[in-house]
Image 1 (cartoon, rainbow, N blue to C red):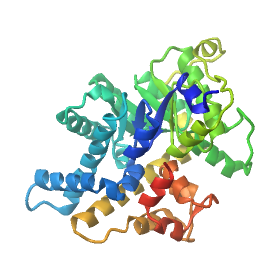
Image 2 (cartoon, rainbow, N blue to C red; image 1 turned 90 degrees about the vertical axis):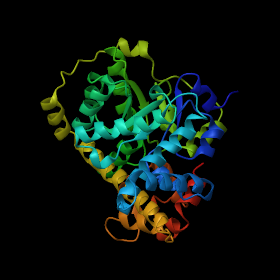
Image 3 (cartoon, helix red, strand yellow; image 1 turned 30 degrees about the vertical axis):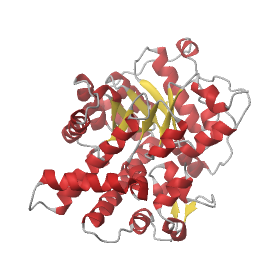
Image 4 (cartoon, rainbow, N blue to C red; image 1 turned 120 degrees about the horizontal axis):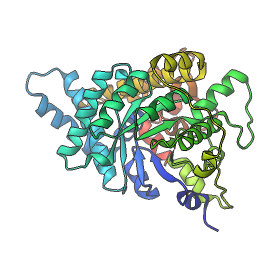
Length: 385
């Protein structure tokens, strides 16, 4: 019998949630998505040292003599993200998602400008814009930026999405794709309720994505639903049939190793028959629903903070390489994420890419120690493949 992964690929587009080119080459997904913490991890591996050096040298030339090192590093971050994206596009037949600076999440104009810059870099390198998705946080301002970009033919992937109100606003804006975060929704409910065990179909993240999928299919929205940030294989199994699922290399490996029959759980025809009321969406409705949804409010801000911290760590890594110093991004990341200073990083404190946290958490106790971090993000990233 075919593996769960092979069966899943027949009903759902499988996307690799990684910046590691070798991992993508092995699992051969249709699409791939990256973020700053994944790129930071990959950038520390010796096999990608040439890409990092190239980005820094090009940034130095383009910024010009006498420029501030910080300006060189900021441009190098963009060049590095696009360079990884271009190499990924040589492997996958579909699209790659590249993220806008999370620190711009509440600034519509700045998000639009950054997205145009990223697309410009891709197109200058010969990539077609329809193969690139610009990742933007699902704030009201981010959704408005995506609406404008979509009208310009720049396709968007709205990330850090936790509530139905965010999803509806994205669909109304004509966004190409949304990435509701299954595992992070579960994390919040586990912490809020103390409940550790959830039966098939009961996982709050699975329930949320199912509700969004049904709503979109019921009312005929073209926006694709891509479940993201999974904690276990069961969550993936429970969302079989979703438009897309972006999965870490670790869970892709598990799916490839498991057999048994995979039942399709999400089906557009069944969704069309569901009794669902339409939600009239505007800014006031969005902000009211967001304020009432503590989980979505908490996790959106936490996610923005987490991606921002990962970007700061990447900038620090590149600055040290630019200065020829001995980089210690592991040390810097630990300080950034150990919010309470207790010497451990929990999953809630991490708030970055789940694949990287799982790889760093070698003993699987839900906490990353200085020793585990000290092994290096590059080594941890290899474990996540």
